[in-house]
Image (cartoon, rainbow, N blue to C red):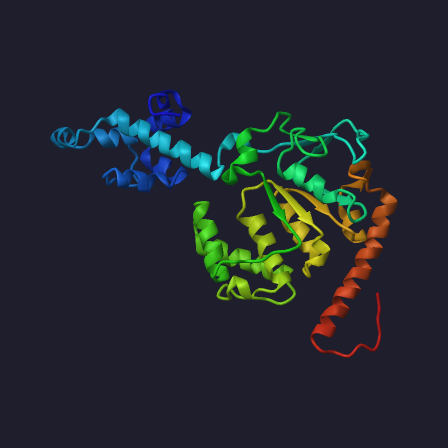
Length: 347
């Protein structure tokens, strides 16, 4: 949008109606923009930007060739572009993700009408290796529109997703946690998290860094500090850090996880953390405990979704027994890690 069209934009009207203090609290990046234009305001001002500009001496305004409306338009355009870049538009709140059927590897249609997922829902994806679990995750990640080998389509809030959700790196609705996680940057954990917090204009960044590290250490087997280099983290620590970061700092409302059971972290706590932030979590898994923990599981075979199973009350009873066994195994694993000898095993 060019400046001549900004006159009718909601951001422009917001600039006209709201005090500067409110604007800068809502869009903190606008402060640097105004300073780059040579303005220095009281950022707690109860005046609007236009009123502040009119307070500038008329002689100074003439000397600087200051056009108030042009400043308002340029500022509105800058805010609009930053919101686009950061993917922070308020209208992008996700209510539903709908998956429409495609075809298996033999071209046979999948046997369902539509699958709808909602925030805080956990869906497991099960099937043999090579059956097509990763293809399904990729279709959702790229918001497929019948243009992938499966022919599936993904809708957001019952509408075809905006192209920016598919092709703009800054506006992805999906965060994916893969099995392999390697860092190539020479940063400490604290520096890495601070940069991410800065990029999202998070206030009280140090507080967020400490909170993410605390959560990550609750998931990881061996604790780590914010001072350690990210390249020194073990596989489990790296995955714990990224899960905590995704849950607490990422704006992506959909999280795709590939075989979290191989991560060497507390799987149940990791899922609880993601779901508490109203994420839609889809995970490919071979772990019976995780498969039964989900609200529904999608059974994949030969590249297609063969069945959709809601976890029954009988399966939930089995799940409770599996969780008791898992707690015993976790306790046993912890004792072995601490170098203890094992003389008995109790569930």
